[in-house]
Image (cartoon, rainbow, N blue to C red; front, side):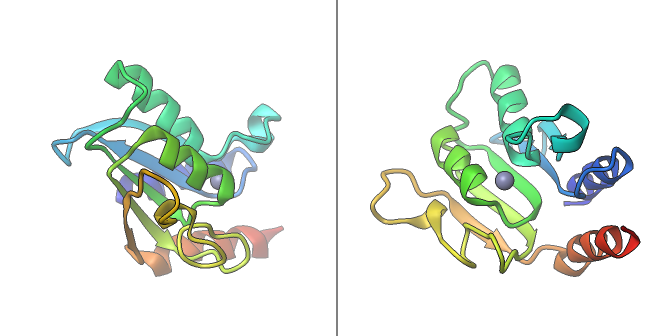
Length: 143
Ligand SMILES: [Zn+2]
């Protein structure tokens, strides 16, 4: 999560909402890829941290199925990212701050653990939550 937080800070530097993500290999320690929100930087509405990290991880993993991998992200995934995480077949999703307005991993929806889907990653929430939320609060206060 410390690495994801560092990624989030990079996003803010580029004028993007500070959200960062990393994908860990099945060994749980090797970082396969990282990403941060680049919507403003790239003019791409789908350039969320999780989507970018998962794409890069798959490229490095040499396989679209990220079986055994863990995605760590500073903010609860939105519906788009939750869908991408189910599609990528990651085993575990770890997030920091909850997103009561748009979260799709337990807050507003629970797409990643929807029993109607055939792949449901394990979810761990609240890791360094205050630090993750603090970055967002600072970012929006400064605007
Ligand atoms: Zn998202």
